Length: 229
Image 1: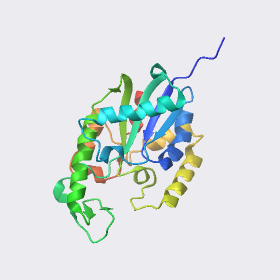
Image 2: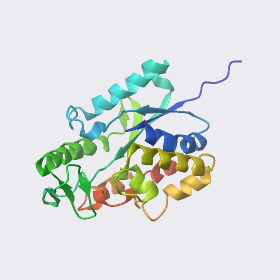
Image 3: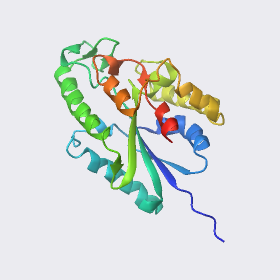
Image 4: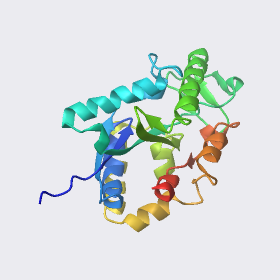
């Protein structure tokens, strides 16, 4: 008798270091499934072509890329898990102010930019997209859920809120994979840490990150994946 095909869990992430960081631990955690990653190579939720109106369709298009690449049947996808950086998207517009440096700078109480109007526009679009996606429980009839790192993955996992180089991100990714790649319980305990894991159910954690300046602070709701999974 042929071996039963494993169900696929597809993780959608922004960059390759996200996959390098989380893949070993997540594959260990979900070893009964076929864990795969789709790297967007950018922030889908703040892309100029994506809006609240077409956000779900855009996610579906990314799923289809992986399905066609690997010949995966839709019925074989157990669920799609979308991981996103929040980047302070939900803060009030008056907390985005003019700064002297070209790059966007994030602080606990504000964002500084040489183009504050552009950042406010980005935040408006990104927050609309996230509002839509966090209420979607399926994409193309495939179970779907979206979890966040705030401000970003390195902020949550390493408590580093600096503007990191690619090499620094790679070093962090390697260190995290080495530490938790074969330690399922340690990984789940870490990601559930009171230091950053937002209490409450899925809806409550999203309501929380949308309030005030919370999306600039160190918060995450990925721990819910293991409670729900």
